[in-house]
Length: 634
Image (cartoon, rainbow, N blue to C red; front, top):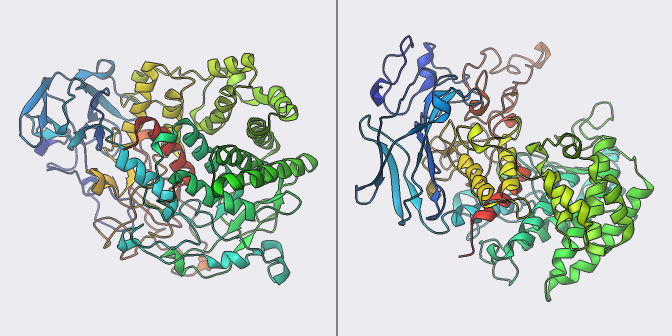
């Protein structure tokens, strides 16, 4: 066993590391700003940095890195570790670490691990776990009722931060990040395929920035709306009217106000014939209000229209439950819009529009490709039928469901792929309807019952694969464990482990939400790919480097072992075109075990940090859905 000041395995280049391990300096290579991303401090005892409910299961992970950039460090726990009350210094519990799988090295994390279960501590307070013999300790954390409520509120508020066409002003946002309404040019957006024609101008004001860029995609926006409404329908009591957004205090739950903001944008994207435009491309700048270039929209498509039908239908169903007010009045309008979008798509089943595609003549319109293939369109059609059936009860929609629900691979292979979790939400929503086919409902629930063994992962949150957006996959996997139709008491407790992973129980000891020190996190994301918080920005680039760092509460994509830096610019770009290309990166996420394929960086081309650190409202909504199961109203 080694002391903290002697944490380098024999044969390492460095001979002494004290405290936070500066891994880049251990390579023997000169410091160079082009060696991105920057390393994270080493953490050997990892816990949920926000804390735990008094009655919850509480397990800390002690780790000894064997593979990856931190493999030069070592820590073998002492036979006894302590849980200490931070306020009093009292040792309240002594525990014997239990090795995971008899000391096996886990290939996905590159670590050996030990577990300590301190669930018997139920007294509220602030604690930390200490290995007193070696002078190693965890970050401090709280044990208290509703411990995640402030984090939950901030995660939901992230949608307000992502609004286009809305002032971001105190008291709804802290002064360092205030900004006037951005992208007011959306009110005169033109058709991308006919840019010079003023007659194509449309008022497409509002909506949300989809991710780290400011573009907005109809299909993806519809998915976010459905996810938020499913979350609300399941636990309406946790969504109060005091999340400090501009609509707070209007006697409508703030989440529904947020959904109404997004759905209003979808309505502007709908044509008179019921079809829906596919995408809105917006300019980027920091702050967002500085983006003044024109906005352009893409043509209508079948996939966008079916997606709109799903979002309009679910909005209509939930808004109709209001006793009075604007949302109830909107319910009828959204029902008509949902049916019109469905009818257009049924008559036009194969209309596609590929944005940002050289072959289609749309290069430069937005970024991510929102168009899908025929197989995926059939799934979106099933999604639309599901929510229209829930709204109307009409047989024609039910027939589509009954004839097509087995299109999902889970019914052929019995393999639950966490990456498809949003599709499972649609299936489970149908299974829970009072007018669902009972046989089909039982089949869906049986297929989606959690089957993972939590102990297959030393960090107690197994998923099928780490890839782009792995943090979203974690949220969906945890959501499946804790879903009311699939959970058991055990699986509900297991679902919380996925939250703990996102809150710091991972090989990096990192809270995968941005700038969360105000909320109790010791080590949270300090920088990520976003047009508002770009590399080199003196105000917003990185916590501790720029004046303020990014806004809090953004869930980033997470470890991506398939990350690849973009190709460098050809010589025709000129001498500045390849800045940063000459020096290959030597730090994560390159060459790391899957769970360590992450790094703190936000550079754009050619570093393509968006593959690892970019946020997405898809990630955010999945996280909110999971977190909502473990919070209560104040």
